[in-house]
Length: 383
Ligand SMILES: *Cc1c(COP(=O)(O)O)cnc(C)c1O
Image (cartoon, rainbow, N blue to C red):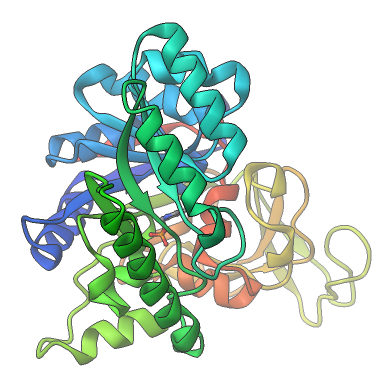
């Protein structure tokens, strides 16, 4: 744990986001809070406890390590679902702890059945089907085998969910592909139904799909980015606004990332700043050094581009972002001194640096930027 910077999480903002999501989806749709990637850089512990306070009892993670983090915080009060990888050596823990998991190939299915039988405890399965993303999921041609297995093993496994994932619902350019996926998912569901097999629930939507294609909400939505107060893409936001009279953003950024100036210095005209020659001072400059670099998750691609807030001014990163430090142009800020606050993501006075604006510069998505933020930075929930 280092103290060069701090991450603050706004409890009120988080509550507003969950209230908005609940109002949008209605009571019949369960919300699963997606907390993979250290809760998109926000910190699993803090996010799941705030989610629970707001009535969320279902969590989605990528792997077993993440499932354990959620259980550590909330034990058996909630349902945890692994959407990605369950290693063979983890199957026993998973089944013993009622952790639900996606199954997308025959070998996992067989192994789950065997382990459940051995433990004399049912494995809770979500059968993921391939509908057009071409990543993970059973092909339609494999469904007969899946059906036979689920019937034969019904003493050992629970057919909890039928699910799929869409290939880019955040952009209208993928409309045709996603629309085809929705239809294919329904065909597979109907096929199972005809074969006397019915999952307890169907789920397919991530944040983008839940807004762009409301029919994908089904019994449960798997919401990551929107609970943190960010839109999956500007297109989804515009699409949402078009359906509403009020043009106010219903989502509120939860995260603030702050540091402090460690040193201030003057640079003569004609000098280069930092490593190499990427920034030449074309005037007399004043530079603030901040103890944050790419090892903390501030991307090197924000060299000469990133914006931060210092004493109510929007200031630019000059030179390259180093492993543990970066330099900021504060020439036009009248008073700057050691220990002044530096906002990397968040607000100061009337200005704010959103994750999205910072990702426009670096050409990265909100998702990638957030998940890069180092786990070693201290987190604090602000009321
Ligand atoms: C990450 C993920 C989600 C959540 O995506 P958001 O866009 O953050 O809402 C949903 N489903 C699956 C399978 C995922 O991997």
